[in-house]
Image 1 (cartoon, rainbow, N blue to C red):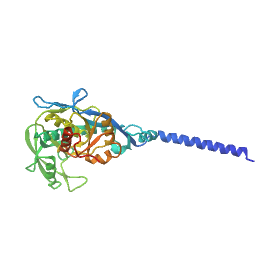
Image 2 (spheres, one colour; image 1 turned 180 degrees about the vertical axis):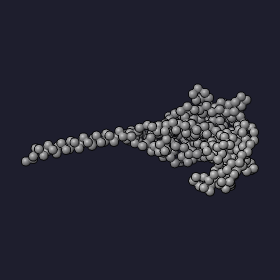
Image 3 (spheres, rainbow, N blue to C red; image 1 turned 90 degrees about the horizontal axis):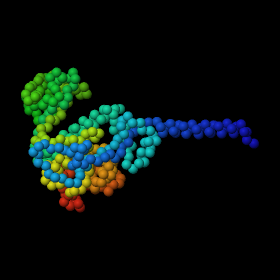
Image 4 (tube, rainbow, N blue to C red; image 1 turned 90 degrees about the vertical axis):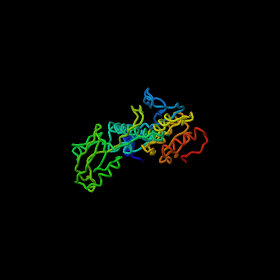
Length: 356
C-alpha cells in the first residue's frame, strides 16, 4: 500500500518542477536576444515626388524629357539598434514570410547607437546621391570633372595646422594629381618621417605646404599625413535630389541614376510600366550588392511593380524563394540596366540578363 505522505511529497515536487519550468520558459521568452528584424519597407517613385517635392529638381535651362510609369527605389524597415527583441518575438518573426531575423551585429556593428546609425545612413545617402548623379550624367553624355578633396583632417595629425576640409589637392611633390587614388599613391612614395609637398586650391587660390609624414600605426612602413580624402565633382548642370527624411543608406543609387538618365534623354525607360529595383552605385556606374533584397522584392510587389532590378551579386539570394510575380533583371552596371529597360520597353518578351 502506498504511503500518502510520500505521494504527497512526490506530487509537490512535480508541481514545483512544472511551475519552475513554466516560469523559466516564460522568462527565457521575455529576455532580449541579440537579433533584429528586417521587414519590407515602402517604395518611392524616383520619377515622382518625395515629401511633396519632385525627387529630382533641375536647374533653369536644363532640357528634360517627359516620362511615364515608375522607377521605384525600395526600402527595408529594420528594427532600431536600441529595440529589445525578445526570444518570443524572434521566433514569431522567423516564421513570417516577409521578415528576416538577423544577428544585431550584422546591422549595427560595435554596439552602434540609434544616433550613430542614423548619421551613418544619412552620410551613405549623401554619397549615393553624388555617385548616382555623376554616373547618370556621364551615361547621358555630359562631362563631369572630379578632383581629390580633403574630407577631414585628423586632430593633432601632421596636416592639422595647415590643411582644411574642402581643400582641393592639386599636386604631390610637384606632380599633378587628378584623383584621390593618385594623391594616396604619390604620398605613399615618401619615406615615413620625410616631408611631402602638398599643393592645394583653397577659395580659388593655389597654395602649397611641406608636411612631415608620420608612420601608419598599423603599418610603420606606410607614410601618413593625417587626412581623409574624397572627391569633389563639378557638375555641368544643376540637379537637386530631394530625398531625405527617414530614408538612408546607399542602396537607392542605381534607381536614382536611372531616373536622372531617363529625364535627361529622349524616350522612356519604363515603357509605361512600374519598375522597381535596388543597388548601390559608384560614380563609374558599377552596381554593387545590398542587404535585404528579399524584403525589397516583397515591398516592390506590394507596390505593384512587375519588373525588379537586382544587383548581380544578389541574384542567388533573390531567387532563393518566391519571386512574388516579378521579372528579375540582373544588373552589373548602369549601362546594363539602361539597355535592359530599353529592350523591355520595346518588347516585353525581350531577352535580357536575368537572375536564374
